[in-house]
Length: 426
Image 1 (cartoon, rainbow, N blue to C red):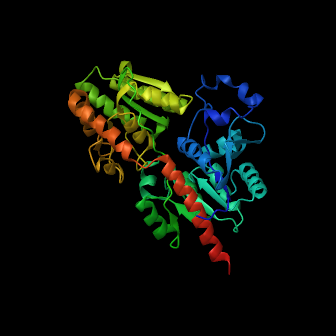
Image 2: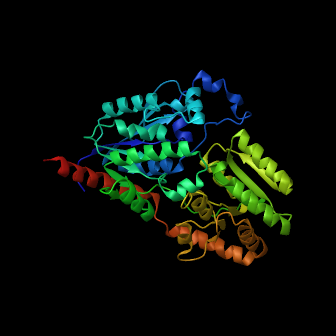
Image 3: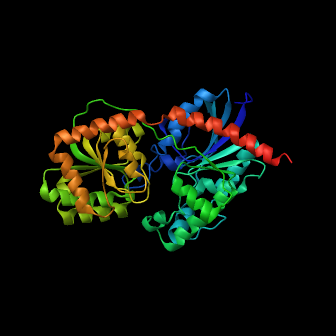
């Protein structure tokens, strides 16, 4: 590897306790401490893969000068600071503006959306003058659309978390045709601008090469989603847990399957962790009432830190994690790392979790009866459940580590920069 230190910008969106400790929140934030009671979004950890990657990147500051450019709600100015050799540039999140919320509701966004975010990001990139920009999570348009403003002499790596243009995403995303058309078109433009596309998902590569960018150059980078094995014994308070940053992902499917299993086992319990809108909560409460399972289902709401979530899920014996859009979710990996056997749905990727040994019980999405039968298999057969628990821990131990993932990032930056310079030398 070349010994020259290179300058990288991560353009991403995340929050954690450490970054929040460096921020001074505006009067607007402190004046809205009732937002939790009103069901509004709070400042909590999200996008843990960025936090995981940053924990490893601090070991590579001799090779990479990393600048993290990230929007954050509730602040009134740009906060710039250095922590463990990494430079942070945190700016006010334009989505705080009520007009942006209205635009989303009314589907009024365009290719010129998020002008304040984009102007700020463009100014920061111009000041930093990076060798490469690595945009992580391009489905979040409030920061990823800034890729369209980056000068062509700065190479861009677009890191995929999902692919909106995957037909499977369209079938399961639950948004209007107009909103889907906007999201998919903006994703296409971002991918067309990107010099390199980071994904290990064969399906995504095939769709992009066939439908969007035939000359796409792919790199084998992935999100830092590996979790350390946690074998600490915790008193079990629930049978099943469903959790997500936003439970609109698939809590409805979990509740339907739980309702079927409840008919055979009326003493089982379900713990639901994650944020939700008042409209969603009302809809779920109505369905729970119809199923007669209100005394058996607990809502924890959105917990503040990722550690809080991990502590809470370990209070359950099993994880109930149906998927609609994700090929494999981080919540499944997190559950396995905590020794929770998982009940989920069949996607193009979830069967791979059982490739070496059985860890996850799978059924077709929407087949609530089959999912309920898998739940009952775990509840009624402790020996089988314990075997799956051991398999989950074993499989987690074999998984690539976040250290190895970030090591690949650093190698990829040097390789991409070398390739880009060779192509543009003439």
